[in-house]
Image (cartoon, rainbow, N blue to C red):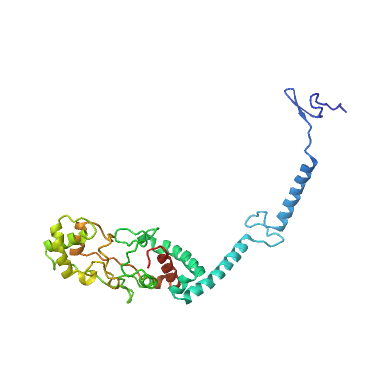
Length: 287
């Protein structure tokens, strides 16, 4: 047997391997590390036996414990649904005012309403409910049909000018092109614009006040602040649904545009409508 070589600098035995005059020291791993490594092997074998681990052609070994991550997920989902069912039942049984006054129910309803809003309402009102031309901003204080809980619920449930619901909000501004002459239309447009802005011609605006009182006040009120029971907008709050400016007002007076909102009660059900009501009211614009 050849004599073992000892490295002269470290005093450690070498393995006998040598590359370009460099010898490999025979430094064995610490025993604690080796035993830990063996323990991981034993653990891996035990895990493979106890749990699904070894892939087969079309499936995998089931494991002696019968564990299934899919079954565990299904069980967790069932538990979550069961807890939600109780809250959904409470929402279905209570009026929106009681739901809003119950902090736990209100929080749950807002979460559910926010989810339903993103799927059903955001395409028109925007993901942040800020609306756009022709689509109301639900974050402000301007509510065509009222902004309290009951009014919002009725609007969501039955829609606006929706032919498929007999309880829908129905009011239309008549076209005034055949009622007012072009000068009167310009006058009333200047007056309405002048309620919150500087009209192009103060003289037109002054004359337009009487035109407004004779033709528009019945719906919008003598003070032009609108009437929620008729869906007539407030014209004195600087919030414009269709467009801004005197030219836009002239077009609306002559040939009004009327939006349509679908009735959601039949599509979503009463519980989801209540959740949407609580959510929309929570945005801050409701009264």
